[in-house]
Length: 227
Image 1 (spheres, rainbow, N blue to C red):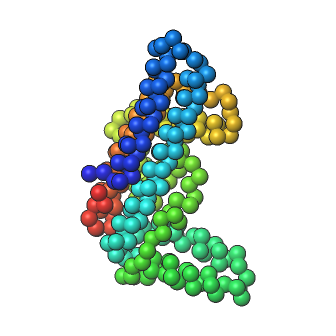
Image 2 (cartoon, helix red, strand yellow; image 1 turned 45 degrees about the vertical axis):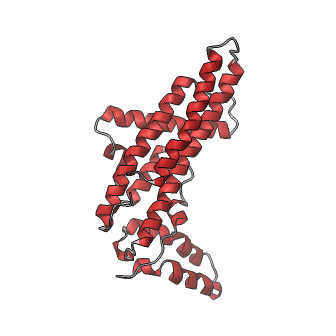
Image 3 (cartoon, rainbow, N blue to C red; image 1 turned 120 degrees about the horizontal axis):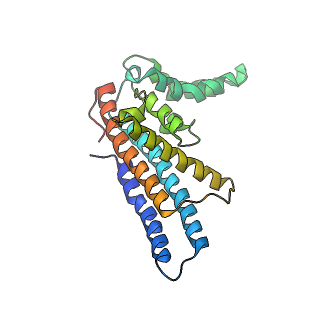
C-alpha cells in the first residue's frame, strides 16, 4: 500500500511527463524553438519541486492524523518530536512578559501537556512538525526522518552507495535549480533528459521512503501501519 500523498504525487508527475512530451514534439518538428524548450524546462523544474515538497507536507499530515486517531500516549512519541512540537509554545512563553503569560500557559496545557504526561493522549499539530523546513533539500529531508527514528533515510532506502549518492545528487540539483529560478536566475534550465532524471529520483525516493516510514511508525509506536 501507499500513502495518499504518494498517490497524489504519482498523479501530479503526469504534468512533468506532459511538459517533457511537449518539448520533444517541438524538437522533432519544424517548429523547433530554443526559447520554448528553455521555458518548458524551467516551468517543469518549478512544478516538480512543488510536487516533491507537497509530498512531505501531505505525508506528515497523514501521520499526525493517524497517530491522533489511534490515541497514542504522549510519552510513547519520540522525545525529539515532543520537543519539536512544544518548541514554538515554550519559546513564545519566554518572549512574553510574566504578567501576560496566562493565555500562552493555557494554550500550552491544551495543546502540549499530554506530550509530557504518562498515559495521556491528545492531538499532534502537523504544522508544528514541519515549521522549520524552509526547503526540501536532502539535508532537511534527512532531518525530518530522524525525528521518526530513521537516522539516515537515504541509506535506509538504498543498498548500494552509488544509488544513494545519485539520489542525493539528483534531488539536490533539482532543489538548487528551483531556488535559483525563484530568485531570478535567468541562466537556469533543464533539458528533457535532465527532467527525466529528476522526476525519477523524486519518484524513487518517495516510493521507498513511504514504505520505510510506514513500517517505522508501526514499530516505533506499536500501532497498525498507517498504510
